[in-house]
Image 1 (cartoon, helix red, strand yellow):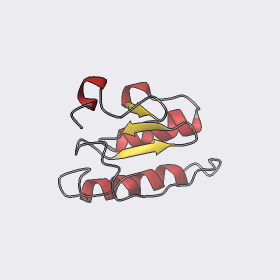
Image 2 (spheres, helix red, strand yellow):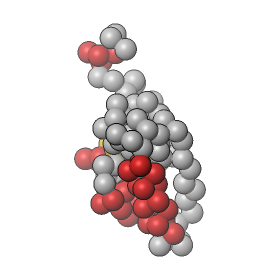
Image 3 (cartoon, rainbow, N blue to C red):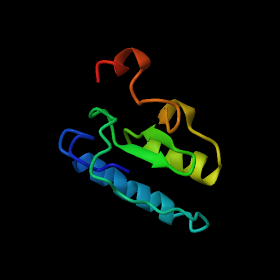
Image 4 (cartoon, rainbow, N blue to C red):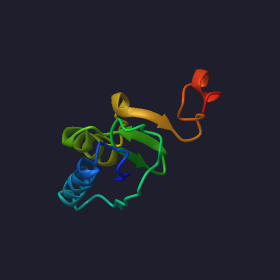
Length: 104
């Protein structure tokens, strides 16, 4: 999960969300999940912290604690992607729409 200052106005929310992610994972001891933080993955453009789930390579935009909980419960625990929170998949091209790719 990215926790850098670009994720939110000052990065404090992103760090708090990282804590929520840890609490959600710790509440489910049957999950074999490792959480790590990164300073910035650049892709979010300050819209929300990004959670990436591997090995699937699914990138989620998580704006609040309920989004974090949904990723943990639905994807990590239930094996179902949370489609309305996905904004990128590894292997499916750049994180920018094709029309913007030439501008980047």
